[in-house]
Image 1 (cartoon, rainbow, N blue to C red):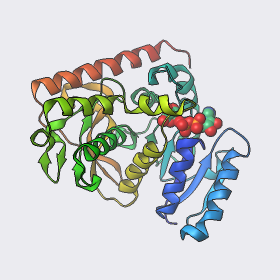
Image 2 (image 1 turned 90 degrees about the vertical axis):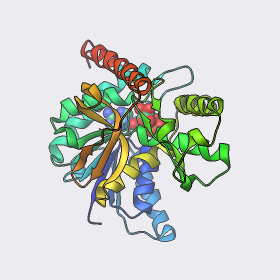
Image 3 (image 1 turned 180 degrees about the vertical axis):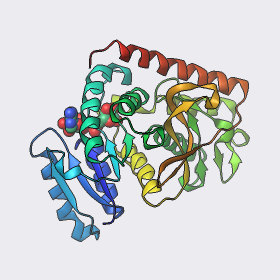
Image 4 (image 1 turned 30 degrees about the horizontal axis):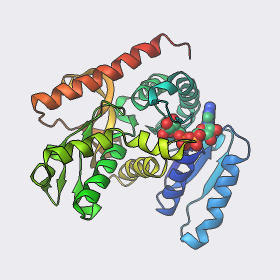
Length: 311
Ligand code: APR
């Protein structure tokens, strides 16, 4: 393939993302993990599925970073997932150290790559990656809003018994309990859901969306969600690889947009071949802005905590 994507972390999210990238024939894939044999085994298994799935993407599994050289995109899923009772924030010290090391390794071998961060707590890990890479802000972004919006869309479709393809949803803010689903901008075939559902039902769906990750953790018990997170990361990669210029909610570094400064947080951006090509500022009501500010304050507190951690 023309393009090369490295996926670091060959666990649940990473391996599923590798599978989707290959099966959509978007790129060759290099799968990296610290556990010996796992990335090699998963890459080989996926390669052996290729004749049936009908794709010619090459998959390489490795424990070293040499094969990652010259990657166009690096998707970082390395780290530990949460278990029942844990919040994403509980992962901070372990995952900050892992993400920092991974980013140092990949950024020197692929200095022109675009980093898509998936490891949690997402918005804080974006800060770690931004600092460790020294990359410009258009080439460091975090996967959260696409996943949270997909969850909201799935719940809207279940509620109204309509095709998921007719649904559109917007979720802003940090990837945590304070995320900000925006019902006014969430539609079915262009009709705002505020005209299709009672306020009570909307509130129930919003709550379920904000709690979407925890709902899966409590069912799986041994780890966190991975099918939808992998799909979300791959949608972002696809928009970059094909220069589709999709508008997607992603964690991005704000410098005054939405009244927020020096912070990674989820807002709609245009994703094309150079990464984030534009930050889209939509008009918010006072309540929506207040909710976004609250979410930003929660992320800011975590980022401040990070400064005191020796990772
Ligand atoms: N370098 C490379 N890989 C690493 C490193 C490292 N320093 N440290 C851990 N890993 C690998 C693990 O060996 C494991 O295979 O990261 C992988 C993580 O996979 P899982 O444990 O299956 O976790 P997963 O569900 O994929 O979640 C990964 O994404 O959604 C987030 O919260 C989630 O932070 C978590 C991350």
